[in-house]
Amino acid sequence: MFAGHRLRIHYAAVDQTPKWRTVDPIGLVTVREHGYLLATRSGADRTYRLSRILAAEELAEPAQRPERVDLDRAWQERGPRFRTGDDQVTVLVRVDPARRDDLLGTALAVRAEESDADGRLRLEATFQDPRHAEWALWRLGTHAEALAPQWLRDSLRQRAAEIATRYGAPPGPATA
Image 1: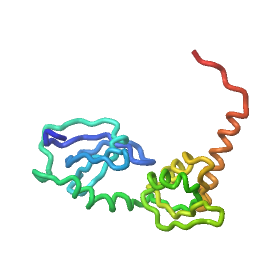
Image 2: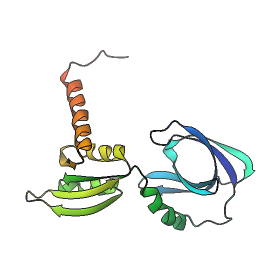
Image 3: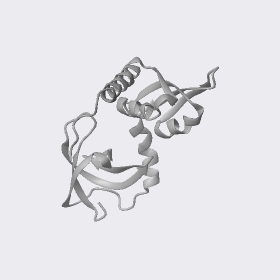
Image 4: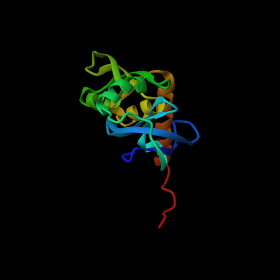
């Protein structure tokens, strides 16, 4: 990328078979501890999460991009479009106030917040996709409760039941 050449990347988009893509890299940004490649492909803006790039090859041909790029400005322009992808989900969650910042640190946005009578906070939070929402709430354990949508409650309940079953049984055979 720094040499100004095109890249061929093997990219694993969420829930899709990995594919090779030829891109014109613009720069790298870090957002909430995740790295992203800003690029264009066939002239269209693209954003690729670095952890989903399985392989990359530098090509000999020069990248088609501006000579100077302001990455802060590029992300400000692309960020909202990137965060409003089709997979986003909004959930209603109750959270212990002591863990509020943990939830806010993983959510893309919080649209509403109010206190319940018992002191817990009720938040309407948006996440990147269903797996992101499940992960964010799972990591808070009993300090959070998904109220809606029902598929998220079902998924968290199933995950908890599977773990309870695993640890309710004697340990499996030891491996060396």
